Figure 1 (cartoon, rainbow, N blue to C red):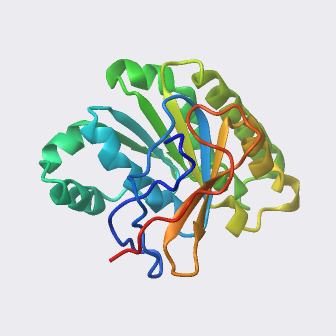
Figure 2: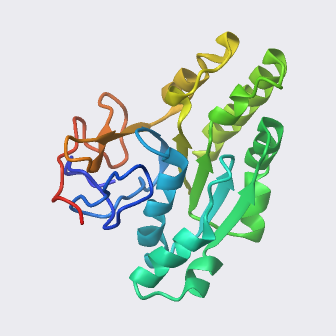
Length: 228
């Protein structure tokens, strides 16, 4: 992300209960490392607002969707508002959906093979670790699959790849044995960003200080101009 410490954001108003996304610059992912995004709003859906800048830069995105949030209509609208044919955007995104924690772990494990078929510079994963809170899955099984996926994600940071995880874990009530999953993810991250709504309901990002950063500045992000 930008190294100025200011908010990054979109120019749209998204469907998150009236929250406006219109700070001073488009939201950006770090060029490398493992970044975690969490906080206010539909965090998985907010991942879409990072796509336009990535795609306009010619980057390809591998999108592992554990939240079932990937929305072609929203992506098409973002493309249209920027005067870019949707087909061009579509060619630069590969979406793979996971409906269980086991499926998400399998997708994460297969990232190197997926990149052979679809060379991407960015990996986005939604609902991590949220999907591992499923009470229909035994605690032991959830822990084993979660730890496997987290270990893989740590390894993929060594690839020429920007890895971004989008989580709403803090708004959920995981079983007691899994309450530290999100903290384990935060500990593994090189950057942690929090979505926060200000008094004017404009959504901003704050970077958690004290980490080896690949592009974010410590301290709270400044708010941008009021949205439409």
